[in-house]
Amino acid sequence: MMKSTFYRYVKRTCLLSGALALFGLSGLLHTAHAQDDYPNRAIRIVVPFSPGGGGDAVVRYMSDKLAERLKQQIIVENKPGASGFIGAQIVATAAPDGYTLLMGFDGGIVVAPNMLNAPFNPVTDFAAVTKLNDATIILVANPTVPVKNINDIVALAKS
Image (cartoon, rainbow, N blue to C red; front, side, top):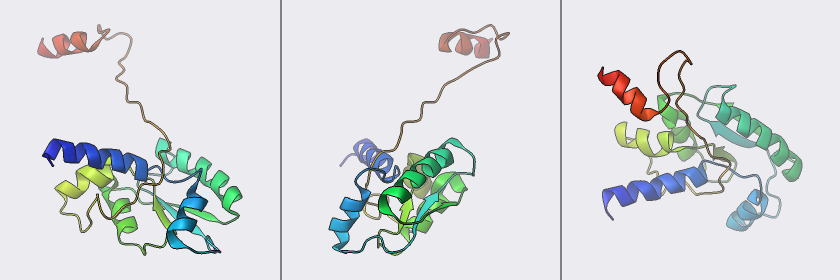
């Protein structure tokens, strides 16, 4: 597999795995573990972002709904740092029992492990569950800056 194809595959996998489980988690994990009583204890969701940010807000909203559906406590644990690598490492090394999940994204699962000599493999050590959301990144400027598009910004930077 070519390197760029590999990274596209990993990114797609990470987006899916990082997005956790609102709809279908109970059935998916029930089938995967063949446990009649899953979940029978609290589920931990590791968020590799600081509390109060966009990713944290999404997980906290989703975890309330998931707790209602599963009739089990959901614990949201923020572990920011190293562009998400710290949170990803915690989940990758947790027991593979479905009780520790990751709100993942490509930084912590794809980029950081390749830069920080990760003790986990982003392709084999995570299982995709679902996609929660898309994040749009926009570029803005103060209205007094004489730019209206990216070409204007490039021209201003060159001047």
